[in-house]
Structure formats: structure tokens, C-alpha cells
Length: 369
Picture (tube, rainbow, N blue to C red):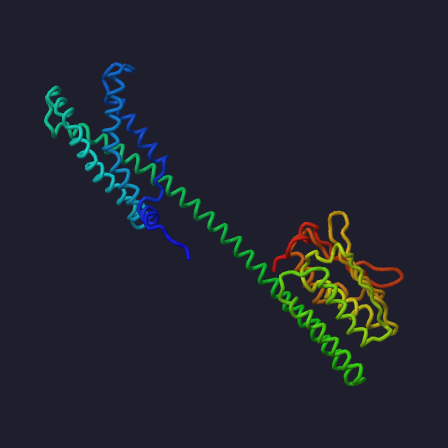
């Protein structure tokens, strides 16, 4: 549980925005006022003493309006038609209070000035106080301007962060939808194969059902994962192809070629499996003699290349536009942008090679979901 510092919370409510730069502005105003008031010859001891004394008295007069302006800006209603008149009124009242405090502290010197210049107290106040009021209003205007600009920049940065967060959430939602479309695509096809085989050959159906259970034990944890490894994906593909080989018999042969050094490399889940299923469904199934499927992974030229090579019938109208391939392309674009691609090329004498190319730096870190 986070502990809130009461003193810090109180300061932030009343005096947020009061910085050393603000005190520096007050110091500059005090020095300008001192240079206006001082009469002794510059740079001698008397001048330095007068300079320091009048600076202190000016600070006493300007500190109350400074604090009042800051507190009023923070606590007044944010509507400009309410906030800015309140700040002006606070500067007026607090400058009078600060001037009165300075008069009390400096009364001895003021009395001498009244006698020397033959002034009444009211005459002296009417001549000197407007100067402090103007300085208080200058402080108020400068502070309000910089606070308004700071708040505008804060709002802009918050809007930018919200926009980036919204874009990220949209990407994540889109990927979840795409993943949800892929999962039934291969699960339902596999279950249909089990049902057909069970009706024609009960012993083979039981064997296939056992393999399906082992397949699901591997597949189900992967379906909602943000990422997987090439090794886990290879195990999933092997289970899937074992099931298909029971159905297709000698019409299907396969090979999985994944170097040991790449087995822990992280990739998005189920993409390779989708390519394998596509090769079986659109490449090998239509041929009476079937064919072979080879799955391989290589790291080349700073990119990770994942390939599914089949000896099926080659390109058909649905080869590049099916749900599985379309979703795979969309997922790659959402995850990696233009740095990743899915390419389909013809083999000789027949068949298709489906290649997923990922940037190596992205492949060695967890994929986002």
C-alpha cells in the first residue's frame, strides 16, 4: 500500500507550480525596486548596505502576494472567467497586506522619510504602494501564463499517452480476435477427421483419439499464450502431423528440422501450425498419392526464417486467401509492421513453400499479445 505524505499533499494542493524560478522572479523584482529607490553613490559600503536592506524590505512586501497568487491559481475554479479575476483580487489584497507588513518593519526609516519630504503617511502610501501593486500584478501575470502553458503541455502529453495506449489496446484486441478465429479453424477440422476415421476404422480411430488428446494437452496452453518457443511449436506440429498421418496413412510423410540452438527462440504461437494445416488441407489432401511436409527454422542475415515446404498440388484459388493465411499476415503486420512477412513460392516439380520472416531482434524477445 502506498503511503501519501500529508505535508506533500498539502503543498501540492495549495502551492503546486511554486518553483525556484518563481522565487528568482521575485528576487529580480526586488532588485529593480531597490535600484529605483536607492540614492547613495553606487558601490561603496553605504550603497551596499542600503541595497541589501531595501531588498529585504521589498521581499517582505512581495512574498505575501506571490504566495496568494499561487494558492489562488491552484484553489480557484479552473474556468478562466472565475480564476483570473480571483487571482487579480488576491494580488490586490495580498499586496496591500505585504505593503502594510513592510511598513511596520521599516517604520523607523519611513518616519525619517516623512519628515524629510514633508509627507503625510497617506501621501507616502499613495505614492509608494501602487509600485508594489504593479509588481504583484506582474508576478501574477507571469505565473498564470507559465502555469497555463505547463498545463496545456501536460494535457497534450496525457492525450498522446492515451492515444498510444488506445492504439496498443486496439492492436491487442485485434490480435485476440484473429487468434480466436484461428483456434476453431484447426480444432474443428481435426475433430472432424477423428469422427470420420472412427466410423471407418474403430481401432485406428481409438489410436487417433489418443493422439488427439496428447495434441490438445500441448495445444491448449499455447492458444491463449502471448508467445511460444520454436521448440514448443515444433512439438505441437509433430502431434498434429501424427494425427494426420493416422488418417492419411502412407500418403503423408513429414520432417521437422529445427536446430537445437533455435529451439528456445520466441515466436508468436500457432502461426507455423496454421501453415502446416494449410499445406495438408490445400496441398496434399487433394492428391490421391498425398505428399510430404517439411518444417524448418533458420537464422539467416539477421532474420529468423520459418518455412513449411510441401509437395502438394501447388497454388489454387484459395492458397493465398484462406482464413488461416489471411489472419497470419494480419498478426504479423500488427506485431512487427513491415519488418515481418509471409511469402508463398512455388516448388519444383510441384508444391508450395510458405516462409515467415521475422526480424531476429524481435524473435529473441517475447512477442506481444
